[in-house]
Image (cartoon, rainbow, N blue to C red; front, top):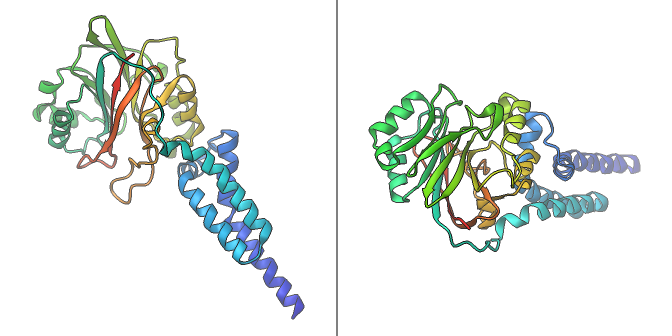
Length: 317
């Protein structure tokens, strides 16, 4: 009987440790700043806020079963991850800004399947000044033109392509195409928007490749976005990053002097993907120069797309 009891005790403890491995993996990867070099670990990191809840439940179960050390470790790891996640639900003070206001919207067209009329209606309702488009196919561009997008936003830098590689920037203000993203400039186009009066804003349509189709290319294209503040003027980088704030690649971009608009407004946990099932994670972002004030942030459903569009109203210094 004693042997059987000890065997059951070890079995229960072993099972608790086994189910705690995802919690340990996320805590270690998030702390050391490594995205795991495989799609599975990268995807697991994207679920970090949920892993916090998972860890608390695991700790509670372990403590109820009197596996004190397992419960203590699970609780400590959950608390550590909570420290990383907590800033996303509190709004930050904004820098002093008295310059022009720019309304930016970024939308993933889901291989060109997004409803062009609905998107154009959203642009008009929100009085968008700059629209970044990714997964823009030639057919999608034609649909947007027929829906009247270029009557509302007449200036454009467009690189339509089949599949996920097409991107573009459409603007109320004159655009001059610029190379801000090195080798991925065709897929992640950049442009200088002339707001008038000598004021220019640099715009980048971000869309690093999804890590499930090439981890190292995703990492490289994400890091293409990270030119240091001071090397350029005021810049806004918006689009589908295929990354959350728990990925080191995206945090590298932020460390160069950018602010995530959602996090700054306390909306950093609002999911943007996917709309075809239960929305899970915020993969779409608007990053702005930290000298810029973020006056508003929202997400909008776009019929036909598997991503929500992200919107930010920013005021220049």
